[in-house]
Length: 68
Image (cartoon, rainbow, N blue to C red; front, side, top):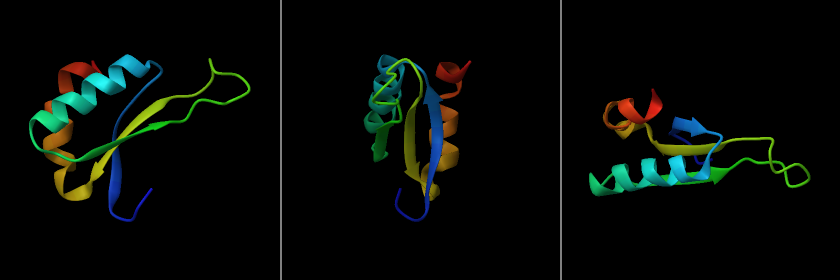
């Protein structure tokens, strides 16, 4: 990941990562979704959502309910 970007959300479910991405993009926060699943064992791994560190607090606040 590029410098100054932080992970604000992670999940085992791709659909939750896409929901998080949509929430952030609706607030004009650029984000990146990374698929960290193992190619040999697709059931192992996570989806991660990353934002620039300047938006990490706001992103975390927006995703609070999705995290719990």
